[in-house]
Length: 313
Image (cartoon, rainbow, N blue to C red):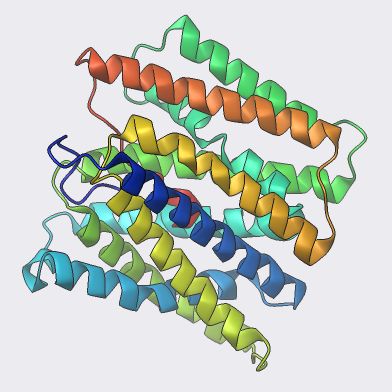
């Protein structure tokens, strides 16, 4: 999840630094999912993957909180909302890592970028925001891209993976709506700290019930999974301190480059023409929605939504 610590106020613009931080964040996020897929290939369960992602990210979240805001930032008057956000976050992470296990990495990453499309739909239904013809057209284009990626002759397992990936993107979009409310009263380090802390006990219980014993080969991947996930959250947030959202968000699509490269290196997987075409449509739709949001914010009609939570947790 990302949200600016203090928001971008334009007083300390360092666009190249912001772009570099965001690109590094996408490398870390892609690395997190590479670790998840490698662990899944080694028969580590999805619940275990999510648990260790949170367990080894917790020190990063705690250090971030205490270093930037001090112990007082742990206090919250909205614990119920944090619990709701954590439940949604756990579901979203299970779905997202499940999609990574079922699909080639480039395809699962591409479909995850339908999140802003779902967020647009939810904004119209839940928040009663006016959605113009431009954004509805982008929504339609994005879903055409998904249909092309899930071509009719796809195998049943791949088709199920597409549904899991779409469900993960949908839950992530719900989280973005919840965080719009949480961000009004809670700073980003507090939100991340409570999400990581609240999610550990139920996930830990699932791991204990499974009785799984991990090998020496699996442990480095489990640790790296959490560290890269935590680093991605920090880097995404810090990027927003040095440049406006409209500048840094397009960098998020660099994750597709890392995912495609990793798929080729680790699994000898290369997207076919349908995957490239569908991914391009989804990317164009997401970027166009982001641009329209920037236009609306420039007109003073809405405040920036600085969250991209569910994909990294």
